Length: 483
Image (cartoon, rainbow, N blue to C red):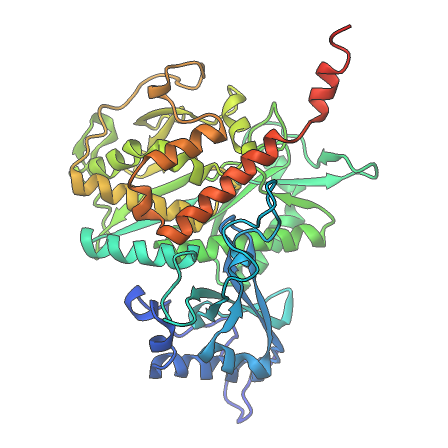
């Protein structure tokens, strides 16, 4: 990589950005955004850096509804044109191009018009493991009108962050605990654990993972991710956290980290799985969301004198009330796969299902930490964080708007009995969660029509495929059960 420019002066690193992603009212229409002097100057600066640092191409990445990175690759000589005019992408790329069980693609068909992805210059990053390449996140637009399409998860989060901050006068800060498992595939195709735990947070366990941790730190630093700490929790499971931030900026970094895990796993001959529940009898892969409300002075306005030891402010209590009030509908956003619900059925493995909150109580769906930070514990690693954080913004804001009371904090262990009455628990199977989502009118404010209908279609397709599959367990249990 070049360290000086052609005139001999120091060159900026390919991962230094001049500014953050512009506000939603700036990026909401790409024809207006890309015509601005600010955008064109940012693009010109990126082109200059690509030439100085020998970057030959850029991955243009958008998150699909299921949370997969999709997009296109653009060579350096074509980047400036694409950054100004965008490049076409069929909407099935953001959903699922495979036919469903019923013979139709999900949400769209072959004859539907393409949308346009436009790279966000603030997210341009040179890849530490391949310095000749870079990556930029995109927004997805309607080609004719130029407006962000409802289908875009990243655009959805940008919209709701903008609405929330303007109405509440504070930013929702978020941090997500990225639990995942690092597995090895044996010669016979079976998966095996790479490390057996001695105990939670065992240092000797982490020592086994030093090559993985060091790569994640190196690549994370190179991509501008503020990695803060790591711990071990169960078989093959290592959690590497980063400092919390505002919704879109944080989720972009978090989403990048998930991709880094795939890169590092490939380097070491492993599989980094974000499947919610790969094995029964050990902890699942959760994605607990830590939420606070921070004003311009940097103070957590969620802290106050209400609700006993939970010590919430009025805004904090109402925000929590909104989360609890809509948690049934939120469940399918945070636990989107049929496999997700195995997490709740493995009693005693740290996956709460009781619709309650408690002070530092991990058996509640919402744990209020001593720092007056709310930890939403229902999400798992198969979720799309752009959508789950959007859900927290919308449901929390609804609670603030309506002054929703969360009730009193719960005491005791609430994860011991899944047979409690339905009104006390969240959905515990996917079809129940889909029905709860469709029954909540607020979800149509969260997801606009194009995104709403496609999201429901994807979840129903997952359910259909699950019910249409005959598992090895079924053959083992039923094959010779009857004479």
